[in-house]
Image 1 (spheres, rainbow, N blue to C red):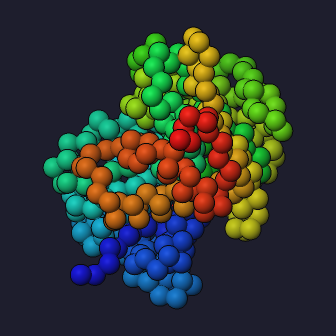
Image 2 (image 1 turned 60 degrees about the vertical axis):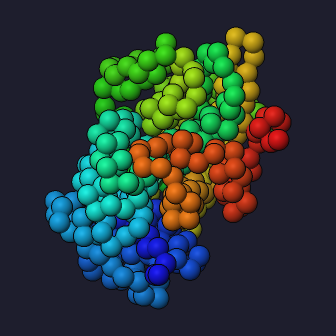
Length: 342
Ligand SMILES: NC(=O)c1ccc[n+]([C@@H]2O[C@H](COP(=O)([O-])OP(=O)(O)OC[C@H]3O[C@@H](n4cnc5c(N)ncnc54)[C@H](OP(=O)(O)O)[C@@H]3O)[C@@H](O)[C@H]2O)c1
């Protein structure tokens, strides 16, 4: 029997290249996929040879043929507002497992609402938001809140410095912040509508300390966390200084080494009326973390079946052990409450 094939759609982008290179470094069979055949061929040559599959978003037959060749498809092409539906639909039609990098709330909501039935019928697992933004908040919430009840609030707070946005990330951020129909989760229910931004300060542990935050930011954990944590309110926040750095939005063309210079802490507070618990990850290079999180998920899908359906990261895999495995790869330092370590 041949070894499982993992396809990377959007392989020519920064995240896709990191994911493809990691899969090759692990000796996995990878199919390089995307819309630009020439760029895919050049990447294949760089990686010492790999099968390529050209498929544009408006070519459902080619996308489906990709899904039929692959056992798992990692979707790295964004914005997912534009690319999400055709690729996810093709994965279900072609019968291959699916992992994506979306932080867009509406894509994630759509995945659960529209793709659950097709995923079940096709017998595939589809994991959305398996990345840095959205994904780390979801995984930490799962690891910190395990077994807790009567939860008032879950806050995932991202402190990011040196984020140099790619063309795809910049387009995604512009679409997200222009969207007036945001998803929030409050009083135990999902709401869609205009959200007034407010001043907030998040108390990161030392050495960061309290930081001014953009609150809320429209990230996907607002959709995924309530599916596995019984909280009344879920909110994501991002340090205000992240977007005040002048280079953040003028960095589409910087080299990969410069892009690797980001540093991050993601802290999650789970608050009850009697106190609460917190956990965090701190490390360098959010891009590498994003790519390797999706690779870890894809590899797991080839090794241990996850039942058919659509999942957020912490629904697909036990969150604490998954985070510990990413920590072992040197991606960050993880701090969890003591009881979660047992
Ligand atoms: N949640 C997170 O933390 C996280 C982390 C990493 C990435 N992401 C998301 O992943 C996406 C890619 O990010 P990136 O940094 O890798 O961006 P990038 O370096 O700009 O690469 C974008 C990739 O998407 C492809 N693409 C764009 N529009 C397409 C379309 N209409 N049809 C087919 N392919 C298309 C590009 O193909 P061409 O080369 O042909 O242009 C390229 O391969 C973004 O949406 C970003 O927000 C999210």
